[in-house]
Length: 360
Image (cartoon, rainbow, N blue to C red; front, side, top):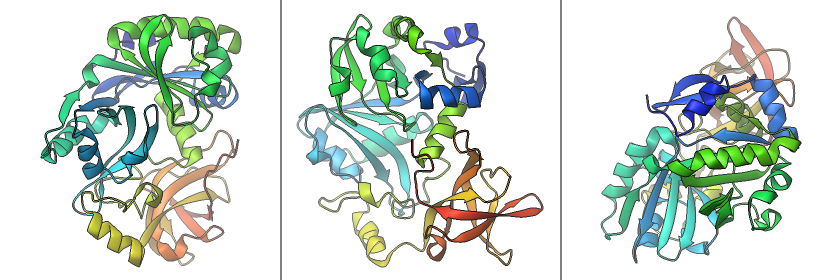
């Protein structure tokens, strides 16, 4: 198991550490519900340094990115970020990622921790145009400072006006006494905040200053368990659960990041799928009775016939009810549709709903 540059701090804080994507990662500190509430109401900090970072540079950097991703990165200007995915040749998804345009010939791709090697090999295999690629993953750390109080709590740490950094834009600036830090108005929680990219040797200082600055705002460290409940309340897909090598962007509701204004890997087949419409769709549902839907539980119709499977599920701390995502035939996708979730021997009634679950 690898450690992040902050693992020793998590141990001192009494975090429960679990293996995740080859790293020892903090899953919780004081408990998922309390941590979830901290992010929804105040400000919390996640160590997500296990994520991967690839630097793509040179005159052909954009050409490579355009070839391997579904979204149109040519629309970005310096300081903008974009959510996208890497399509495979079979209609599925290699990974989802965030693309940062640092300069016209300098781009940062942020990929999921469990897919770093897979993504690197996949992108490299399509790099026929000679773009320069560097894997920075081992040398960089990433903190997600999330919650409605994040701007106010962190403003004293930077000369940038944090309130002026709009959603999915970023600044390369000073932060916590460190120069050239990426301050990105992105995150996975739906409660606002920033993601901070810095070098491993800088992150302990950043962590310390962040907690000093946030002390008056009730700042707390947050583990991966609350990260999962927060993202699920927003209906954000998690790679390995809701999207994978066999799920297409259109099945997963990611048509909005699939742009046929350019040519990319498997574009022709995905275009046909868009025209015909996918046969199954990722839906969001709420349980109508008590129960907790879990990944792998069957979704059944009124006659008890299996029609799909739960890909993500939890007891929503904000809503106080069971919520989940899962794939079903397209005829069951409309909000208001009645389905059932097979929880052990009980087929618990549920209703298809529109995302996000949590409206804020």
